[in-house]
Image (cartoon, rainbow, N blue to C red; front, side, top):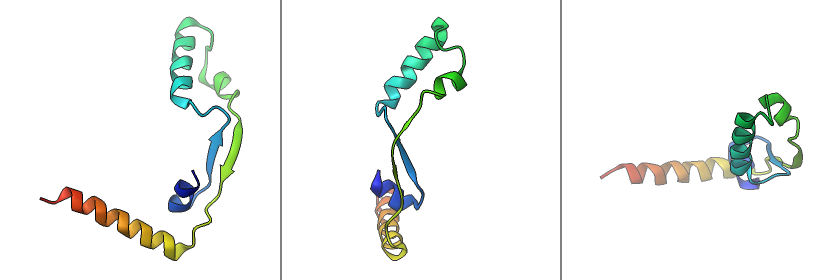
Length: 78
């Protein structure tokens, strides 16, 4: 999460429940069963575990992104 925050240069929030895919599936099932009638009511149960803030120097970020773009470009060529 720290690397993601550094590369994107934005804060990244990590919820207390890490299994968000399972949680989404549970909400869909609960919604169909009438347990969670609306998304806003369900969303109120979300809580923050930790926030990751960018700490990577801009020059390092620029170099890493350039390397990533180069790697992606190499995979797209014959």
